[in-house]
Length: 180
Image 1 (cartoon, rainbow, N blue to C red):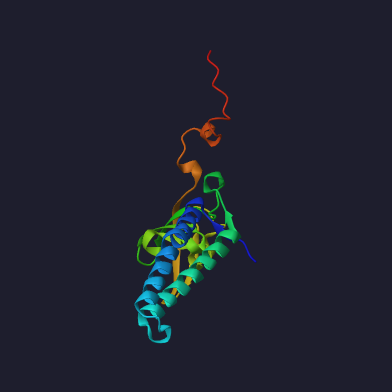
Image 2: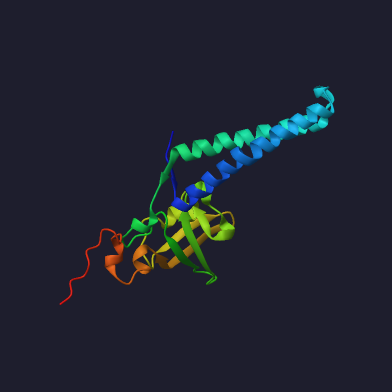
């Protein structure tokens, strides 16, 4: 059983979906099955019953899958990542060298990847090429249409969002500044 890297937000999304499937979908499907049985007790020919049972099986399979992902989740706190190299959780701005097209991607765990939202899986070819590189580095990525070369023009780590390094320490741990 391998670990599954996730951001805290990605874990929360999986937990919410699991709760929805257990607390809402499961009882709804049980009710639907009971109503189908009440309408026609000949289950072999009861199409509503067959459809509800099929939907219930799909829901139960999703529940098992979500529980497995959450059991293997390795939540990485991206707010504690530092350094000059691109790593999991980083938001990277790439410029395709041939077209000049600019794209912004955040490197996330597989379950939370969503290209439409600018989130790519840590196992994707682009992310694998970027991890460990520094700002300004060029990377070559094998794409279905052929190799593409990207230049990382900037990337967001925590240090880019902070103006005062004392913010790196939680407020309840910080010592008050001495007044002179």
